[in-house]
Image (cartoon, rainbow, N blue to C red; front, side, top):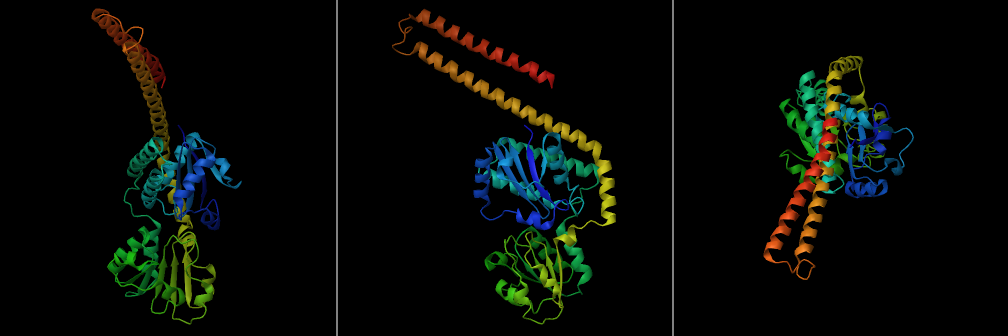
Length: 378
């Protein structure tokens, strides 16, 4: 079965459009609601720093009321898009490997809520395996490209050695920066709504409420949370007059109001800065796409063939189970006490059981013979 994808993604859509469709809070409830409304057999939702994707197996995704500008991928195009996403071919940072973990997390959440079953699990695991092969073949398997690594390079080149940096959030990007920035000689302090979660980093901590009112004492604030509302507002920070502060907002939706960049002492960059394509990146992407194309064609063909085989095996298994149940019910009825055949003598009963056994064998043989031509056609 081919999945059907509905997606908003940067740069095809504005960051604000993608941000409006990011769902993290109460995601399990949303998954169950979406599946009920769409009547999908299986459903997975993926949100990254530059895209949201609804993946449907069966059902009708249009019943969720998507906007007319949403992109839809079906059939071969759906497999190709998922493969390119998993490989990092259409990420702003070419070869971004963070998306691999994000796909696994999305699948885990869908499995936990039981909106993803055997087919979604097998399909996405198959996608990730093919993506890894593709990475190796086109030289994208070093795992160095991501928004977090781009942010790290940015901080290294714009901050002086020994700068004091506050990291807000405890997600993957925050963990990466909390590990790498001290290696570059920066002084790191962690912050989070729940300070107990930040304690695991083993670094100094500062209350988030304090940073929200005044970033005094820090040369940079890096924020990457799952908050639906801005944590840092123009109203709060405009009451201060601080030394220059770099504000790096890696969240989607944004953790900081864009107006903060108007303050003379704030230098603000957000995801749009790290997701903007340079001419050099466009050239690299063009070259990578050309090298990848023949492998993508072959991978998509394999993915679809394996999906068809899974459906055939499922249908066959279901038919076998139904046939087994039918024969067992008939055999139980034939020899049950009080049945019309209950009075048979031992020899007759033995002949009946032999006949039933022979009938069962022939029935399953006929089922298997019916299946083999269909498999040969593929």
